[in-house]
Image (cartoon, rainbow, N blue to C red; front, side, top):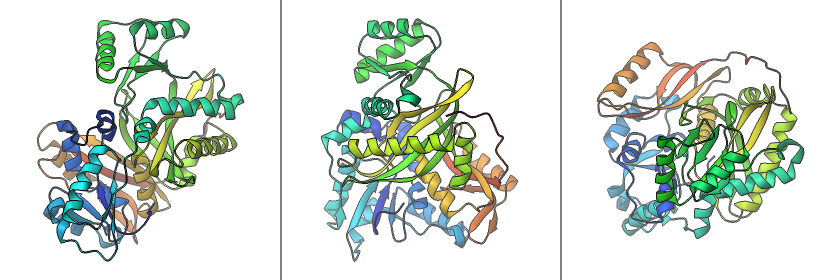
Length: 416
């Protein structure tokens, strides 16, 4: 995944909202700020040798890194933003936020005032359009043209600015329905309606979304059986490189829970237990072609396209373009963890959790470390629990992996 040497990473989740506001002085919600603090070290697991990662507190990060077995210890260096002026690298340092936005660029511009060795990506107005769900709809429309036999019957989302617009869509399609705000991700900004009409709660959600973002999209809710994504890299010069597949899990409310870890053949087997390998390959080729046209010359960096397998008429089908995440993703992190850490004979999960009660995350961390001791095979994890970030008695967000021995995937009747 490494693009070039000498990067300085910043974990800035929820950047879609920062893009929506368009302000370089955007202030994230308290929950997002806490997530940024607790999980600030995550880029260490996908960063390269001699890269840096910006932290609020480096002593705890160094203690955490030194506590890891040397064979799996990342070589990225934690650094305070106030220490950047003291860096004197032999080559320029490339700014690498989790998600590019006017806000993250402003943070790095502040750093460049301390050290002129920074290379900071430019913000383009088209990045706002690429991040919104309207672009995902455009891409889905193009995929239906490329692969009509597979996707012509798939209903496109409709963007609505009034309740009457939504009612007209609901009158033309059977329930349930899924509503989405244009700038949201990881299951946020979604609302499900089970019937063909609104209740008071859904009306309030829609009214609040209209007030905040102007429009919402509506589409039929599908009978999902498997979430997955395809991860890519765009070089900004018209070339899109396929990085790999990721398989992830969501909660009953569609919020992100975690990613499967394991080899690419293992993850592909999970998807092709429902659909054919040839169909999956056709989707990859079609999506890569559309991304080349849509983002290939407009964006340099990583991106992921979320998809899903769902039940349709007693068989399985694929939705090939749920949303496009124009940033680093948990799927890309899972790919890197699988490649760097997981023993080929093992599989597992990357999990993100949040505990509101004070000290609860810390106690669960200690319990899991005791219950699932780390078992290594050289520089690979065969089994056990590993926290990816420091956990203290004030931690609320945890990122960890839990590795087990591979078991075969149950075969199902597949289609496509």
